[in-house]
Amino acid sequence: MTDAAEIPASISINTSDMPAIVAANLQKKFGDLSVLNGIDCQIHRGEVVSIIGSSGCGKSTLLRCFNRLETISGGQLIVNGIDLSKPNLSRRSLLALRANVGMVFQQFNLFPHLSVLQNLCLAPQKVIGQSSADSQETARFYLNKVGLIEKADSYPDQLSGGQKQRVAIARALCMKPEILLFDEPTSALDPELVGEVLEVMQQLAKEGMTMVVVTHEMQFAREVASRVMFLNKGQVEESGNPREVLSNPQSERLRAFLSRIHMVLPGQSVDG
Image (cartoon, rainbow, N blue to C red; front, side, top):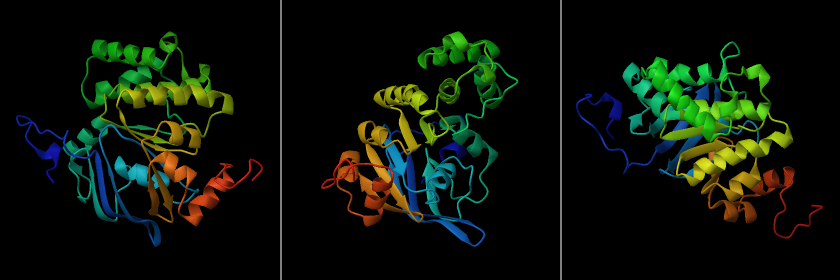
């Protein structure tokens, strides 16, 4: 497949008919530890895919591979038309990837010494060369979108956890990405703050944003995701329609996982 970022600037490439992400026999090792053991998947544009599984199953590692925060050890991975299987990815390709594939982390990763507005303007100015005026206009647009325009001049330590995560989502949107990756975006939040973040994500899903979400929020996976992938020991053990997979798991490991997080399965009482 063509690496879109290697094509001269005078030539455009249409990736709209390609899957957003293609992984074939994807492998990742850390020394002798094998974390991803032959992941095969395709994520299409406009899909919202929730990746679920027990701690240590490879969920976050897979997500980090999608954004080249981790290099893969084997197999093939193509994200937004860029072949990440290449051992020496060009700087141009990496910049194209980072500009078009946004990432929202568990811990927000906001710069504490910068205001909310400055946090949002930094990447557009540094990565894609946006002017100060244009980046501020974009930042205010997305702050308004996540319901935090009044916090533009606040600093991160003046925000609640839910507000920080909404700012982090707005920051990712300021790059106008084609794909958004979320690594357990609500796991660091108090339970009463989870809803405000999920509401923003649900709205993005309705607008057609391609999203890959590592999550333990099964209600979000069931109601918002178009597909759920269950990882076990570095492999995709089940994948499909969330309501079908979560209501009628075929794998004993998935049944055990859902039981541990207190989801009621067919044939079980509420008390388990």
